[in-house]
Image (cartoon, rainbow, N blue to C red):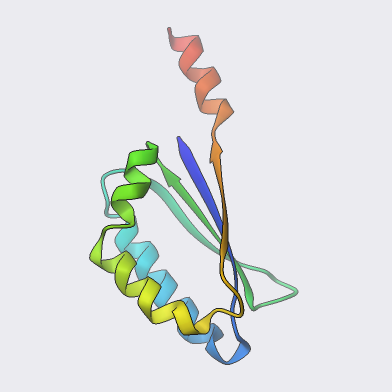
Length: 104
């Protein structure tokens, strides 16, 4: 598994519009063959902070996701909503790797 955490800070006046656009992107992303999960998290004590937890089968699946029309639309629509540029961190799932080794 290939996991990407995307951290975003959204301007207060755009929070509801951001949530709507991001939930639509999440719904469409979950229809992609290489997407296992696409969680949208909102910070409880700071509602302008969001974390997208995207789980792909392979790094290539994440690259394919970035070429979809729904991602391009989401990126264009939400660009002005950002307080500052988003950041992301990529992870590998060690638990999945350990389980793979047990099956071999």
